[in-house]
Length: 77
Image 1 (cartoon, one colour):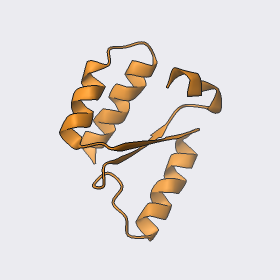
Image 2 (tube, helix red, strand yellow; image 1 turned 90 degrees about the vertical axis):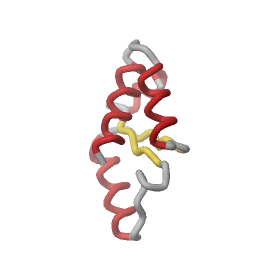
Image 3 (cartoon, rainbow, N blue to C red; image 1 turned 135 degrees about the vertical axis):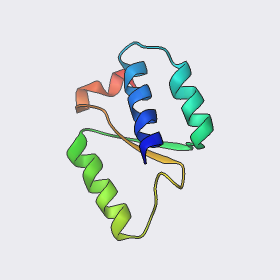
């Protein structure tokens, strides 16, 4: 979902010191209820694959799977 990707990018920009308004506005518009922070892209791919296998649409359920870019990045979030 392109909108959820825009939300991921806005949150990542905020975590890097950018403004929070874009992420907040997208979260409201997309009805994001939960953000699952994961270490990296391979972890996110595994969660997405498991959700697909179980017939779940995480984005449609208001869940954003967000790779942080490494475990040491958790403090930024």
